[in-house]
Length: 135
Length: 275
Image (cartoon, rainbow over all chains, first blue to last red):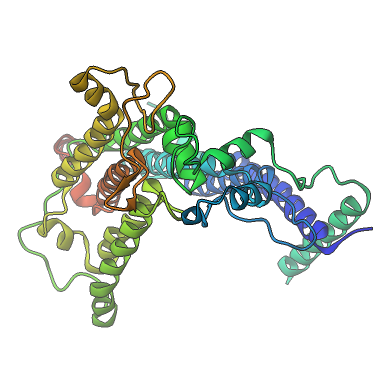
C-alpha cells in the first residue's frame, strides 16, 4: 500500500533525477558560458539535495522527524537525549552540504571571473565565437 | 503554447513514474532509522556526562563542522580562500578607486534608496545573530558570512559602487578584515596547545573539550552561565568575518564598470591597437 508521504518523497527524488539530466544537458550543450554556469549551479544544488535525502529520516507514525538540534539541553535529562537520538535526522550530510554550498558559491564566483576575463579578451561569452578565434 | 504542453507532459510523466516506483519498490526512500555514525554524533553533540567525547553544543551540525571533523573544515576554508584568491588574482591591477567627478546621480530611485538605507542594518544584524548563535540554533559562521555579504551587494546595486568605496568598504579594508578572521581561526585552532605550553600539559590542535590524553586542558563550555561551547563560538565568529569579507571583495571587483576595470596594460594595448 502506498502512503502519501512515500509518494511525495518519490516525486521529490524523481524530480531531482530529471533536474540532474537538465543540468547536465545545460553544462554540455549550451554554448553561452553564463548559461553553462547557471546549469552548473543547478547541478550543484541537485547534488546537495541528494545528500540531504540520504541523511533524511522518514516520519514514524505521522510524527515529523526533528532537525539535529537538541533544544532541551538545559534540562540535563538523558531520556530526552535518547528520544532526540531516535527522532532527529542525520546531521553529517547537512554539515557537508553547508560547506559545499559556500565553497560552491566561491567557485562559481571564480568561474564568473574567468568568464568576465574571456569577455574582456574576446568580447564574447559564446563558445561558438570563441572557438573560431585564433591566436 | 508549445512550451506549456511540453511542461505539462513532463510533470505528468514525473507524477506517473513516481506513482509506479512508489507502489512497487521502496529502495529510493530514506529509512526510518539513521546510520550508527549519525546516532553517535547526535548522542555526543551535547553530552555533559562524558566530557571526553562531547562537543558541548546542542547543534549537531556545528559540532561536526568545527569539532568532530574540524580539520576538514579548516581545509574547506582553505579551498574557499583559494577560489577567492584566484578571483582576486584574475582582477589584479584593477584600480578600485571612485572617479573624481560622477555625472548625475548614480543609483536607483529615491524610494529604493530610502528602503536600502534601513535594510542592510537589518541584514547585518540577522547575519550576526546567525553566526553568533551558530552553536545553539541552526546557523554558523559560513551561513552568517554569506548572509552578511548580501548587504554590500544590495548597496552596490542600489547606490552604485562608488558609494561603498567612499565609505571605506574597499579592497584593502576587506583584506584586513579577512586577515583578522583567518588569523583568529588559526589562533583558536592552536588555543589549547598554547594553554598547554603555558601550563605544562599535553594538548591537541583543534581541541575543544578535554580528551583522554589531554584531560587537564579544555576551552570553557560556559562563560558567565552562557553556553559558548568552547572553541565553537570563536570559530563561528572568525569564520563569519572571513567569509563576509572574502565575498565582499569579490562582489566589489565583479561589479566594477568595465571601462574602469581595464588595467593600465589593457588600456595601453587598446590605444596602441587604435593607432
